[in-house]
Length: 74
Image 1 (cartoon, rainbow, N blue to C red):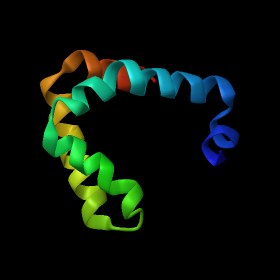
Image 2 (image 1 turned 60 degrees about the horizontal axis):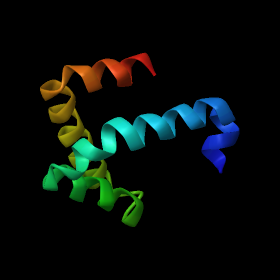
Image 3 (image 1 turned 120 degrees about the horizontal axis):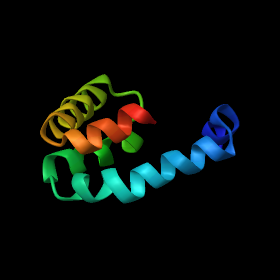
Image 4 (image 1 turned 90 degrees about the vertical axis):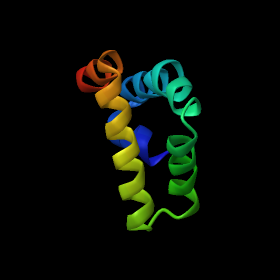
């Protein structure tokens, strides 16, 4: 809810669309990345979990330039 207030409903809808249609299928195909995504809400203050997610996400964006472009445009 806080994200919706911060970014506005339209931007939040775009973020959800980007996540569901572009990122989520790629993340689910990579078990290590999927696990890192699941760890974030379980341990929101854990800097190691955040760093692992960032590293895995960077790998995905390096491998898939189309998704990287879509994320950058957002």
